[in-house]
Length: 404
Image: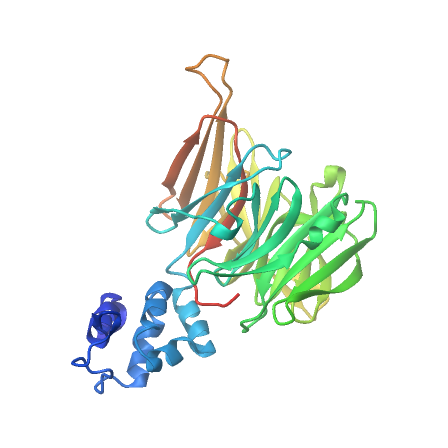
């Protein structure tokens, strides 16, 4: 029984027992029920299988269709697969000031297997794509044709279902700051898209709009008073709350605050980042089931990475606890994230050509996994372009049964 529960092969055995096709219909000689397998046992088997297999088995009979489409099953199946089946999706394109289409590559973070990632056929003729974010394995993308006709696409690649939303950020193109965030409410099947913009860095207010998946429309154009010049860098969604670093100081490069937005309560909050956690490079990452602040410092002799945990106390300030420090390992200056206890990072290496056909411009992009305990790096993917390209977006992704 243990093997049955742990192996996805058992699902396909059930598939063969449950259904035999004859001209597209059930064979009358095959029983439509398995009386020796109760609903409780079927639940234990299917909730542990991968989402793709669960989708296939929904078509076997009404009994399984009802079981595998329930909201409770969708949530529990997500929890079972959240850690063990993850892929990293990397959007690659020309230099940052050249806003044209991205190319996407996807790799399994455990084995390094590279998968194809194709945008839906409905928007395949558009020129520009970027990933707003992914939560619960639903991908939110922004696309346009030559800067016009822009829109948002909310998409489940496994289910092949999608929904469109208007591009609110496109109405405020001349703002100094204009960002999106995408995430699900805590313990819910409903999501929201947040657009935050600021007309100039010196303004003390930010404006925001919110898209609600239930109402299928934008709402709440409101203003938030802030002490930072901008929010940015990769955001993290945790338990229905969006986290950013709020930047200030010279060239707007100093991490001044942790800025949060609760998707359910529609409320912003800011918390001071103490001087003792400052480094040369900063980002927010997910680690051990929560959001962590990562600082990287390097000089001619040493390289250190510090991971800090922050916790809200009494709703008005944060406590900071240094989880660990690792020396002697370089973290690239691009988005990084933890999968289990390993750090997955993206390395970009560019070579300038000198004009000859054998010495052209070239970019190598390597997706690698950093193992801290043995202190070694494993390359998952190494891909080259005969041109200067840049990593535009990095997103953790895998399949799910959540609806759009």
